[in-house]
Image (tube, rainbow, N blue to C red; front, top):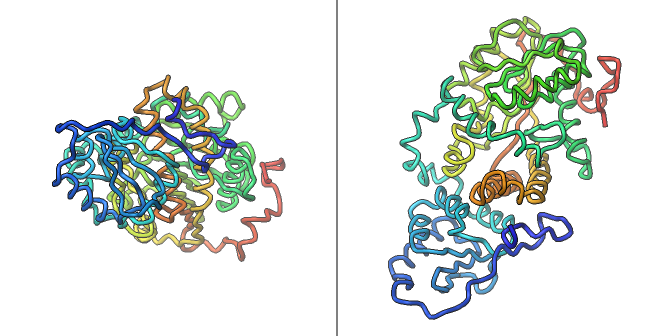
Amino acid sequence: MGQEQLEPLNKSISGGTNYLSPATAQRPTFGEMILAPEKMLLTKMMRAIGDPPLQIVLWNGQEISNHGGNEVARVFIRDRAALLKLITDPELHFGEMYAEKRIEVQGSLLDFLAVVYRVWPLRNNGKFGKKSLTPFNDIRRNSIAGSRRNIEHHYDIGNAFYKLWLDERMLYTCAYFPTQSASLEDAQLAKMDHVCRKLRLQPGEKVVEAGCGWGALALHMAKHYGVTVQAYNISKEQISFARSRAVAEGLDGKVEFIEDDYRNVQGKFDAFVSVGMLEHVGTDNYQALGEVIDRSLKDKGRGLIHSIGLNFPRPMDAWTERHIFPGANPPSLAQMMQIFEPYNFSVLDVENLRQHYAKTLEHWLQRYEDNIDLVTEMFDSEFARAWRLYLAGSLTAFKSGGMQLFQVAFARAENNQIPWTRQYLYEPQHNPAGESHGKL
């Protein structure tokens, strides 16, 4: 993508980035001139989002800034309609205009996003973008039919796309980095073992997984911990890939991949696990999820839910909800308790892996940028820029503390077969399956 690419200075995504060359200065015509009301509204909008240290450059070359040369980046607005859209709804329309190249950033995209996230008033009580989404509310609710449509929008756009920037096992959830220098592949392996240790899996047990992605965790549990797994997912692309992997690894007799909604889970299990699905469930369905877990777990059952989360309840930003993750609704911890409290589940452990997710996204974004020409060939420039912004924005949100990553372990209230200390999380004393299970 030429100058639109993040410049891989020393292959680092945090280095300086020059997204475009400034427009050649020329005498503006009357039609190109910015009107006083437009400038006033732009200034008012910048104040409303916290007045970040940015220089705005308009289509006629006029520059607007209140920071005396200390700006982090320059933002080029290429036409009047783009400006009016941005003023009307910055949360929704910045991403749309950026994807269309009607708004461009000169400088580091990550630095630009960092200063915006730092000063943007957290959530504005949903004022920005909420009205824009009204016509989509019904079709994007997480009913059984709505969930399938929402998942297809994000996950069924082709396994080849995700293979370009995920790890070799195709894990699309937060990794766990035992050290800062661990590779993404090793960190994803460590994440699966971290989850398995929290579940205290034993050979011969039965596990149900809700939302299994491309199947890596289910296969890992069966191969290295000696359990049998029923794994549910409504993504056709992911289920097909997972079934092929199970056959190739000789685990199709130990893992059953079921193309169905989590609400249709049947059977009794020793453990329930869900990694990266709760964001798509919707808080209105939390009690229904709790009922599924309650009817599925045996008397000594236990479970773990791994989910993107928030410090306080608020809706997903309007652009991401409309264009990237329809139906997404990360919860606060208080909201997650709606799953456990009605069924008397005891929460045993809560861990926040926010910085691990930021590190994971650093790897994903760098790999994405390394392959952005291929992404553009697969789709188009607008898609490639939208996903760049999504990955960079997600990285910034986790670094800034706007997003969290919660792992919540729980069990039946009467289950006293729980660890006395947390030592088991970091120093497993034995290998349940009698073979190496990827301990780093």
